[in-house]
Each structure stands twice: as C-alpha cells, then as structure tokens.
Length: 619
Ligand code: AMP
Image (tube, rainbow, N blue to C red; front, side):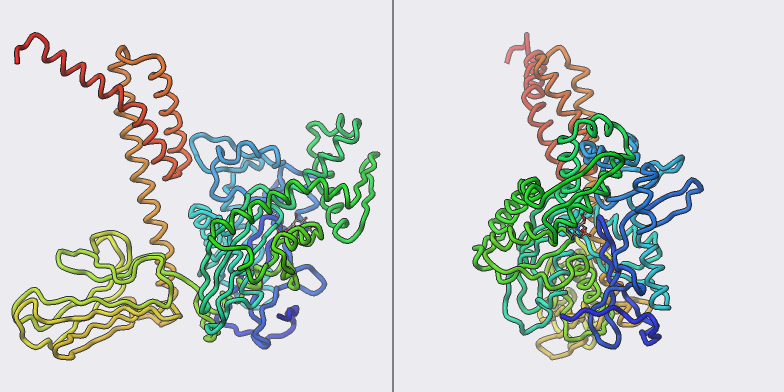
C-alpha cells in the first residue's frame, strides 16, 4: 500500500466528519486519516517534520505544558519535571510498578489511600490519564492545524494485552482531551488492516502473526481473518521488553566497563538521562552501521553491532519464547501462519528482524514504516466507522448481549455477547392471554437478568394478531445486526403472517449514524459497568469476610495454633492488598485462600462449642 504525506495546503478535506486514527504509543504517538482524494491512509505531519510526536511531557515551573520534541530536551536538563513512558502507568497501581520505579526519573507517589499511580511535579499531582490526555490534546491540536478543521472524534489503539482498566483509562484520557473516542482497537488488528489484510469479505482465510516491539512493550498476537472478521486466537508478550530496555542494557554495559563513569553516575539523574539519550542514538545508529563511538563529558562511549546484538540477545530470545507460547495457545502449527507483520520502532533493528524471520521461517512484512503502521490501520478503522467505506466490514463482536423483555420483566437473550458481527438470531414466543391481539417487543442490551437493569434500545408492537387461545400463536422474533452495527428487530406471527419490524433507533429519533455510534458507545461503557459491578461485588464479599474473620480471630484466639494465626494474618494481608489493587480475579482467589485457611479451625471451634454445650447432658 502506498503511503503519501498529506498536502497541508489542500482545503479539500471533508469538513464535517473527520475521524482520526491515533496511535498513542509508549515512546511516540501519531495521527493518521484517510486522505479524502486518494482514499489511502496517511499520517499527518507538517512539512519537513516527523509524523511522530514523542510521548514526552514537560511541565515548566509555571506548569505550562510542552509535549513532543521540544519536551525531549528537558529529559536531560529537568528530568523531574519531564514525563516519558506514561503509557506504562495507565490503569496501574503503585504495587504493580513498584519494582520498576527506578526507571522513571520523575516522582511516582506511593500513596496508599489512592490505589492508582500518581505522579508529582512540583506541588501538583497528575494521574497517567491526565498525562496521556496532554499528549492527545497536542495530537488533536496538531491535526486541527494541519487539516484546518476541528477534530473531535477518534479511534485510539491500545496493546492487545491491555486489560479493561487500561482501556477505560485510555478512553478517559481521550475524553479529557476533548475527543469522542468512537472505538478503542487492538494495535495488531490495526497493523494488519494497514497491510491490507482482512479488509474484504471474500478474502480467503488467513493466519497472521503481529510482532510488535516498541519502545516500552512487546506484544505478539496471532490473528485469524476469515470473511473480513478478525479473531484474536492468542496474545502473549511482556510489558517490560522494548527499546527502552535495550537503551538501559547499553547504559549498564557502558557503566560496567568504565569504573570512573560507574563512580560518577550514582544518583546523578542528569548524567543518567544523558546516557539514556546516547544509548538510544547508539542503538539507532547500529541499525545501519557496525560501530558507534561518542563521548559525554569526559567519558568515551563505544559499542559495536556484534556486542549490541549479544547484549540484547537474551531479551530478543524472550520475545521468541513469547511467540512460541502464543502459537501454542492459538492451537496452531507454526507452518499455518501466512503472514508476519512487524510493528514498532525496535523492529528496525536488523537482528530483531532476522531473529523473527528465522523463527517463523518466513519473510516478514516490513514495507510500511513500523512506527506508522498502527496509526494507518486506526485511520482505516476510523473511515469504516465514519461510514465512508462500505467495502469494508465492521470488524467487531457484540460485547454485550441483546435480547427482549419476556414475562416478569426477564431478559431473554437472542444475541449473546461476543457474537461476531454480522449476527442473526430468532426465537419463537407466544401469547399469555386468550384472544390477545397485540404483543409488545421491547429490545434491551445488557447482561443482567432483569430488563430493568439493562439498557432499553427500542420498543414496538406487533398488532392485529387474529384472536386465538393463549399459547397458540407462534410469534417469531428475529434479530439481525448488519456489518455496520445496526440492529434490526422483526416480529412475525407465523400462523397468520402478520409482521412488523424496526430498525433500532433511540427514543429521541436521531440519525442512523448516531444510532450506530450510540450502540457502539453504550456497548463499551455498559461492559465496563458490568466489570465494575463484578469488582464491587467481589470487594464487598472480601470486606465482609475480612470483618467476620477478624472478629472470629479476636474471639477465639486461644483455640488456634500459632501457625494458624500466622497463616490467617498473612492471608488477610494478601486479601487487603488485592482489594486495594482492584483486581477482581485476584480478590476472588484470595477470598478462597483465606477461606481454605480458616475453614478447618472454624469447624473445630464450632465442634468444640457444640460438645461444650452438650456436655453433662444425657442424650
Ligand atoms: P514505538 O514505541 O513503536 O514508537 O518504538 C520506539 C522505539 O523504537 C524506541 O525505543 C526507539 O529507540 C526505537 N527505534 C526507533 N528507530 C530505531 C532504529 N532505527 N533502530 C533501533 N531502534 C529504533
């Protein structure tokens, strides 16, 4: 696929529905759109500048914010006020990143009352969501400047391994930046789209491996594409392997081979930052040259390509191990993989490319710029959402169930969550009253058993059913979600042929496009509500268990062995920690562990209490 830089002078872009694709990267971020004339995805950039906006934020002492290239210089001169790799902190608690805080030159607050990470700059505190929103704001304003039109809508990509908290954090960052985030999509899906894989309905089935080695993270995804629908067969990766780590390895190598540098570097954050910049430039130079030489202050720095490769070999080998696991999890043979797509700046390293190609025994797709490929794919997805490209399928699933209300206000699901779109389903119902001439069909979306807890999408009545005894009419209700995500619900009485259908429109009667967007938005948000509910339920259960266990221990201390007391205390602590980490699965696991520990002595104490109560009595 050809790639062109957009002509800034053209005023020919459609002014109404610009939806941009945004790759919000750990190291760099960028924006792409579909060029209105060529219909090809292009990254946005001003003349003679790079499309990449470094994901770096500098706060001056008046808290003015500078994002991008200009902020880079401050990594060296003012590291405590310069934020990089904020994406690593998205949706994370302090406990999760504790062991890695030394990699950040800025101050990460260890605040036990707030379980999500905060960053302190001067007297101000920022969440990773706010930090990411500053980057997104900058991207938005650059895009507006280039396109000469307001940009309010975006598709943003995230790594495939991002959990819901991280996806939600990304969505919130978009909202804070004034962007309506129409869709969060997986980076490997976007990359495959950019290579033209899986865009058309009649394409034969393909299996794709997307190897993404960026600045901060490694991600391997195995995708299957059939009839234009993407299925993620497996993902694997490591949140702590990336170009940043290669830079750190080089720094360590230099420090370990130079005693005076070792002595000086200590806590000298400025020198460390300087070394970081030099290490990165060494690494980049070694992608095309065999040797690197430079100096900082009075230290000479040297690195050959061969040494660099031996230094990064263990990390590259780790990524290959992840690939093996991903293939195993996908339940496929390596020979079934048709294409390998390279993503991320670090795949420019020849040794990485060679290692991947050697492992898969195939040539890799590396014709597109690995830094731009995800944004280009996001632009393609944005264009599909804008309804501009009817050839492409909306590659999606329904994350929430769709159904109708039945007797007693119960939700009867016709299309379960995670069904592939387009989707179709039908079911037969009957009347409850003799001679019933009409039936109301109310369409709901959600996972709760009672429709009152779900979201109502539409309602219509099937009228003129000929008079029949209750239970005799056969009313077939059909649901169809087309490739554009529009749901049509129909109802037909099969004996008489009376029928009625409705395209799902919200009560206020807004446009089809808005219906689609609302449907997609509510789907995503509702899903998060459900997760929050599950987490809240787990937390409540955990808190109740903690309370009863602690009371029990207080009362029955004398009956327990020292080991039981110690084990309980440690299980209680782990459960408390799990609660602060807001991890539902972990909380449930810890509840079970605490229950397993307390069950034997609880039963024993109970038995003793019973036998005490019974003692002296004749049965
Ligand atoms: P990304 O997160 O995809 O933007 O990737 C950025 C990472 O790619 C950073 O660690 C860069 O240092 C690294 N990178 C960019 N260009 C090159 C290159 N020519 N050779 C090696 N690494 C590079």
